[in-house]
Picture (cartoon, rainbow, N blue to C red):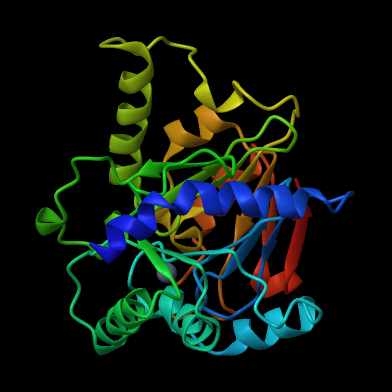
Length: 292
Ligand SMILES: [Zn+2]
């Protein structure tokens, strides 16, 4: 009951925060990919100045970086926290931030995944919700476009019990605002699920037929560029050629650790991506900030 009430107030609260943040001028939408070794940790800053943390990397590094990046904001700068999926290389740093800051909105799906870290995280979120310090939203509940962010995956009727590869529950976010460069964040979603996602998007928009040259991704923004956060740290199993062709990114972000023991990023993925975009890798460049 508490959760429903809390969710019902979400839109007002977000609207309130938009108004408040709108008082500050010259906000540059941007995305920052933090170099956290093997893992993902990104902050998306919307055109109104909301800060959305998407995953938190495998350690406490992210929290220290946030503290130095946003020292004047009560040390808790994030408005919305999104956990794409429960793997530790995405969750550990995010859990630390949630413990310390009780962010207003925590977005994740109750995917079935057996790990103590994930169990502890869920318990902690439940406690924050009970104490009325945070609202837990599933990805479907977070599909509001007030922040200019769409959830492209998982779909509404997704059956989490039928997933045997937890990468494929990854929440995919599409920042799609008129005033900014579009950015597509794929989490660790692997290529077959990306194909299903594309089918969902295309069918949803065009009935039963997929027009040959239909490109939803270029529909809103006036900018020519597009940012893609590659799936699964640049692994080959995250390379979906159709998605590249449709989205046509100009900048490709890869969050990955040095001398990666899984072989990320794959040379096949890098070679393919090169045909489209400038490739920006955290293990080479460190923290990467891209204005949108
Ligand atoms: Zn990962």
